[in-house]
Image (cartoon, rainbow, N blue to C red; front, side, top):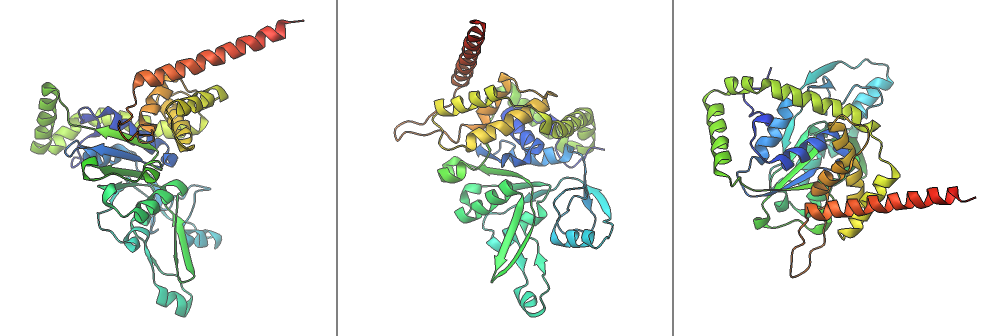
Length: 360
């Protein structure tokens, strides 16, 4: 049954790129999150909660603090691991994907969790109180105004998003637990930006702005008014499209590991990164994951050039070098031209190879 208290994801008007960035991170959480930059009132938090609402329930260890997965080979927290090693059968339950908020002003202990040091040193017993990273495991971590967080806390979030593990060390005592989540950061650039080193660590970035077309703005208001008047009836009207998208995302999650990305596509991505003047290699790795997720979303196991173009619009905007006098703007035409040039060069190289083989 649809959750009548959450606005349906498929009922959101516009903001297609933002919705795509969120979906791709659900398909492959190792994409390291999505940064949504733009003005207030553009459905950022609504989209995050709506997406969590349509996704299938996940199976968890019923009494685990972190909601560990009972699937064979899945990473386990120390408590669940000890129970398995002792031959205990883990009791399971199902729950909806969580959306965990990180408020501005949070302390490091609130983010990573805290250890009872007095008890650990006196008795040797480890007692850990989960923080935000523990509660967000296998869910969505939503960080509003991420640009206002202290840089070292942003580093902690990005490290956990990249590694899927949260480690805490206090006075020679350490503790770690799985922390794999979809990281969603939002910010208004008018209130300050993130340092380039932190921007680069977000896998995807989306710029959002209010809808300018009057008829579509009217549709936004109309749908919101209908939802507030009768949430259950409104959710029921969108139930079929919500279930269809949820099923499509779940199937894409299963298919993504089987998507083939050939060397020509990797070369095309590398050429695109060089053409756009991107530093480092994170963009190339993010492109690799994003194109595979896009192919899986379209029920394919092979990447097409349209996947490269769509992924580039999410991977590169926050990584492109900016000159002191002029901001670098990414255009679809520039992406398409670079991809076309790479493909033509690859075709010419293959033709030369065939010609050489024909020579006696």
